[in-house]
Image (cartoon, rainbow, N blue to C red; front, side, top):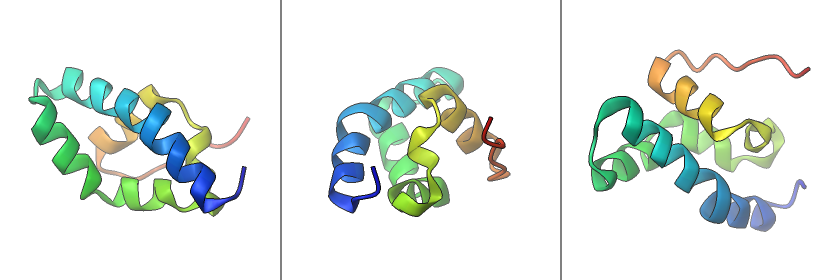
Length: 77
C-alpha cells in the first residue's frame, strides 16, 4: 500500500482515531485538544508519507512515539 490516497483513507478511518484514543488516555487530554495537537505534530507529517511505512505500526506504538517526543522508530521485525 504505497498510494497516498490509500494511506489517507487508512489514516482517517483506522489509524488516527486509535492513536488519538491512546494519546487521550496517556495525557488525560480532551479529545479536541488531542486531535489538534496530533495533527500539528512531526509524527503526523511523517505518518502521511507512504514511503516512511509508519502506517504499519500499531496505534499504541505510534502514541508512545508521539508521547516520547524523540521520534525514534522501532526497527522492523
